[in-house]
Structures are given as C-alpha cells and as structure tokens.
Amino acid sequence: RICDFCVLHDVPINDFLMERIAAAAKEIKLEKDRIILYHGSKSGINGNIAPLSRDRCDFGKGFYMGTDPLQPLTLICDFTKSKFYIVSLKTTDLKTLEVPADIEWAMLVAYHRVKMDRIQGTEFYAKYATMASEYDVIVGSIANDRMFYVIDSFFMGNITDKALVHSLSALQLGRQYVTVTQKACDAIRVEEELKISWIERKYLQQASEKNREKGVSLANEICKTYRREGKYLDEILDEVM
Image (tube, rainbow, N blue to C red):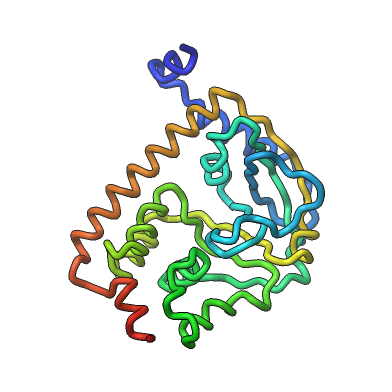
C-alpha cells in the first residue's frame, strides 16, 4: 500500500535514492590517484575483493564496477540480501584497456558470452580471446537494461552490426570498470556500504522494467531503419571460417 501511494502521488523515490548516493559520494575524500565507482552484490562482499564474477559477463571473470550507480542497483534490486557499495579504485600502476563503443566492444562481449565458439582456431577468434590478456583493468560501455535487449538481438541474428553501432550511439551508455587481475582488485577500496530499503527496491524494479521496454522499442525501430545495411553476426563469423 505504501508503494501504491507513492506511485499514485508521483513520489520520486528513485530520485531521492540517487540524491542520497550522490551526497554520500561527495563526502568521500580521495587521494588524487583514486576514482569513485559503484558496485552491487547479490549477497554482499565477503573477504578480500577478487576477480571472481561469472565467466560469461561482458568482459569475462572479474570484479565489476560502474560510473552510474543506477546500473548496479537495477541488477541487484530483486535480491533481498543484496548490498550496494561506493568504492574507489587507485588507477596508478594498472595496465588499462579502453574498449571503444563500437563493433570491437560487441565482438569482445560476444567472445566472453560464448557466441563465437564455432570459429575457434581462427585469427579472428584469437584476437578477442587475447585482447585483454595483458591488462589489469578493462573499461568499456555497460550493456545496461536498455542495451541488453539490443546486444541480445545482435547475438540472435535479428539486427545487423550497423544497427548495433547506431544503438550504442543512441543509448548513451554508462561505463564499467572491470578489474581482471588480483593486482587491480587489491587497488579497490570500499568507501561506504549503503542500505537499500524495500520500497527503493520496488521502484528500482520498475525502473529496470521501463529501461528494458525502451531497449525493445529502440531495437525494433533501429532494426527497421537498418534492416538491409551491415552484416549479421553469423555473416561476420562465416567470413573468417
């Protein structure tokens, strides 16, 4: 009933939450070689931070952080034991790979999500398999709630690479920092843990669903516009066989 009341009277719960996070981040005093990032965990951080996420994440196994707090919040809002953290990363002495928001990003994500296994043994496959092998941190766009449907449509062969690239430009995605070595994880410091209330979780779930709907709508429009332009993923992979 509280949630229904807030919806009925347009109470901006998500705005209040973002303001609370921004205020907490502003209070944190950092050394010049540290940057503020945000992390969400389904069950909380236990012990030392390590590159132990699932293998099939955007950039493989690592510790994922974002520049936009809303992204990790929408990922964990369905889990009652989830935790939200403001963290900082010491960027000096870390080898960092910056992945541009273009087809290179899409193919690197495709590799890590096991979408190009049928071309194992090719130079094309090896390029993405080894692209980040010498780096401590990977920085690139986040496949957020809006983008998830679009990138999935590309993987399933419903939209072309040209449609995908135009989607990347249109969606103004946030950026994620992924520490893929223990050295980089050791450079992370938890600055503050913020509790997310039940009603905030409910509102975040609604925001997540709205973002997915926007992604579906955008992908469908772009698919119509670029239906005959560019190449599908299968066509790209067939060319390197």
